[in-house]
Length: 240
Image (cartoon, rainbow, N blue to C red):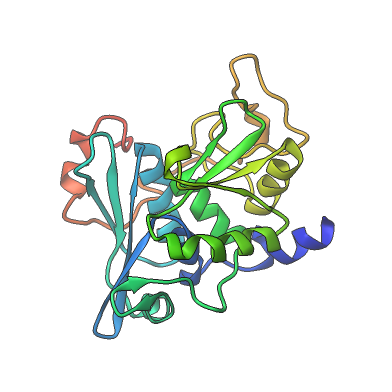
């Protein structure tokens, strides 16, 4: 386990544009334009928008968001960037998304996947990672999960998926260790829990287990976008 943490843990590699592989492992999409590419994903909660914008900004990627056509969902996307061109080249066969032969998962990539589409199971003993509709991608992504020490059960659309369900507190704790502490905007109970963490009666993770950093005004957000002036119109999305 310690060896896996040293190889796959979030501290093993600095954040970079290639980490967006973690979004493409799920429901993320990539589009190419000339020598650039853009990654986008639809998420089901405002806190996921905040977390993803902060993560994209850490990687030097300009970001925008908008309401999705599905009620209560949001679209988050990067700007077209030459830094994302390698992802487009690796993931697209024409306009079709396919898992590249050299695909792998690590702490940074899994962190983005959890931020965009991760959720605890109803019994609290497992963790689900939701997938996109491209069935041809599922098995390859599952193999990459298993390589990180996270063998998971694949559930299809009829069983509430498509998603991978990581079963057991030990495996969920391993996931928590390699992806690092939850970002400040993650609601209590939504992030994978480390083994040593205990819950309050309401299911909240103790404050001491969270990263204790103070958010400066505007920190964790991308530079002004066309949507910036309208952020106040979205209750709870950003504290401006």
